[in-house]
Amino acid sequence: MGAVSATADVVVALFSLIMAVAAPLFDSQVVLPRDLYPAPLVDIHRWFAVAFGHYLVADPPPFFLGLVWLDLALLWPVCVANLYGILARRRWSATTSLMAGVYMLTYLSAILGDMLGSGKATLRLLQLYVPFIVVAVIAVLRGLCSWSAPLAAATSVASSAQKKKA
Image (cartoon, rainbow, N blue to C red; front, top):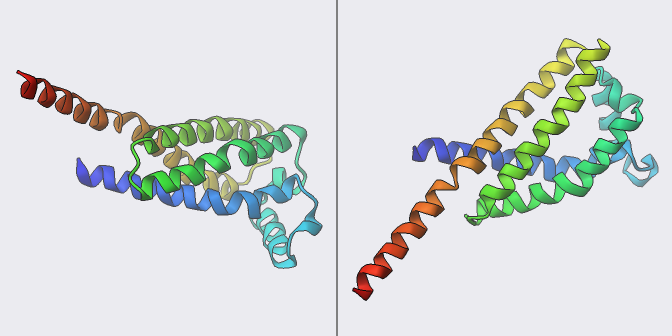
C-alpha cells in the first residue's frame, strides 16, 4: 500500500506543479489582455490552440471564461497549497488533494460536455484531457484514502495515552 500511496503523491504533486505554473502563465491568457505576457508565452498559447484544435481557447465562449476565472481564483491557490502540503508531508494535503480532484472533475465535465455535445472537438483534443481525468480521480482517491492513516494514528496515540494513565 505504501508504493501505491507514494505513486499517488508523485502524480498529484506533478499535477499540482503543472497547474501552479500553467494557470498564471497560460490559462490566464484567455481572460486577461495578451499584452501583459511576453511574446514567447503568447506564441505558445496560440500554437496550443491551433495544434490541438482547441476551439474553446481560440474563441472562448462566456461559460469557458467563467471556468478560467474559477481556475485562477480557486484551483490555482489550492494546487500551490497542495504541492507544498505533499512536499512538506502535511496531513492537510489530503484535503487539498480532494478539493483539487473534485474541482477538476467538475471543470472537465463542463468542458467535455461542450466538446462532445457540440461535435467540434478533435480526437487529439479529447485525448489531451484523458490524463487530467485520470489524475483528478487519483487526487480524489488520495484525498479520501489518506484520511484513514491520520485517523488510525490519532486513535493509537489516544489509546496509548489512556494506557499510560491507567
